[in-house]
Length: 101
Image (cartoon, rainbow, N blue to C red; front, side):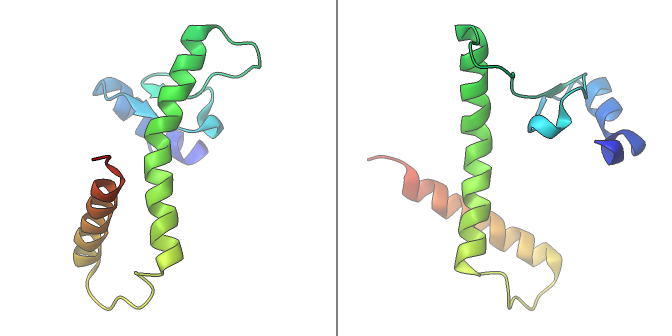
């Protein structure tokens, strides 16, 4: 959170009106950064918001876990731009495999 404030990331996202989801560590960031709601007995609206937040973040976390467990990028000997394209292709293929039907 300190690094995001120091480098002006939160202010830039807010001024550009870019809605951003973050985990609970960013509580209090304000602006366009949305964090999950706390508490046990939340109203249905807040529970629905937390559920949507978890679904979106879960996809990225699953993808990162897959890349780590398969150890695909450990011995990669190319430029970082090619690694980015390779990672994106792997994540798209993983997403296609998860689709029903």
